[in-house]
Length: 387
Ligand code: SOE
View 1 (cartoon, rainbow, N blue to C red):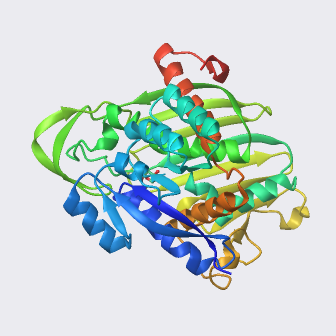
View 2: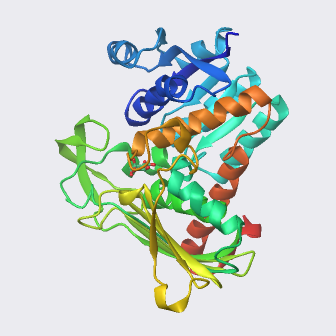
C-alpha cells in the first residue's frame, strides 16, 4: 500500500534549509518503517534566482518568493520554518491559522511573548508542531536519556553544560545576522545556550531559577557584503554588535539538581563543542558532540577494581535510531540528527500525536532564556515563574 504523503513547504534555504532538505530526502530512503512519506513540494526564499537554484540543487518540486503565497497553497500539509528568529512568530501563527502542521527552527522565537503566542496558535488550530532541537536526536544522547530513565545513575545532583565555538573570535569577522538582536533575539545565549537548556530539560528536568552573566567582547564589526552559512565577507562600514558573545549561568532544577551552563563563541579551538556531564548518586554520564557517537558512562555499581568511565559507541542496532543506518561501528554525523527529527515528525503526523520536542518545549526553553536575560539585567537570581 502506498504511504500517506506529507507535502512539505520549506521557508529558508541556507544552512538550516539545506540540513532540513537533506533530512526530507533521506528519511524514506533509510527508514523503510517511516509511516508517512515527506514530499518536497515547495521551497521559499525572497531572492528568486537563489531560491530557484536551491530548489534544483536540493530537489524541491516548486518555489515561491513569499511565505504568504506558500500558506495560501492547498497542496502543502507541513510548513518548515528555517529562517532567523525574527520571522518565526508571524509565520507560525499564520501557518497555524491556515491549518498547516509546523516544524520550526530553534529558538522558538525572539521573545517569550512571541513564543507563547505561537504555542497558543498551534494549540487552538489543533495542528502538529515540532521544534528543531536536533541534538536530542543523537543516538548517544537518546541513550543517555534511556540510561537515566532506567535509574542507572540514580538521583541527579549535577548538570554541567558547555557549548563552545570560535567562529567570531576574530574582531574583523563581519556583523552577520546572528550578531543582530533584532534578527536573532540574542547571541550565544539563544543560539547555543538554547540547545544546552533543551538537553538539560530533556535529561534532568525543569529548571526553577537562574542567575547569569554575559559579555560582548567585540562591540563593533564590519558590515558584511556577502554572507554564507557561518562565513561572511567584510565590507568597509562598521556596525554595532547588539548581542552577547558569551553567556554563563547557574541554575536550580525542580528535582534538586544544580546546573552550570556556559555558551560562548569565543573559545578558540572549539568548533562545535556541545558538551554535558551529569552526575548522580549511582554514576555519571558524559557526552560531547565533537565525538557524537560516543557516550561515556561511569557506574558506582561496577565492582570497585574495574570502576571507570566506559565508552559506549552508540552505533549498535539496539541504540536509538541506529536500526536504520549502518552495521555497528559505522558512525553517523551532524546531518543524521535532522533525519531523526523528521522521522519522529512523520511518526507523529501519522499518529496525530505531538512529537517531542514541540512548541511547549520551545516555550519552556524560552522562559529560561528570558529568565537568564532578566537576571543579568537586574543582577539577581530570577525564578522561572516570574517570567
Ligand atoms: C551557529 O552557532 C550554529 O549553527 C547554531 O545556530 C546551531 O543551532 C548549532 O547547532 C550549531 O551552531
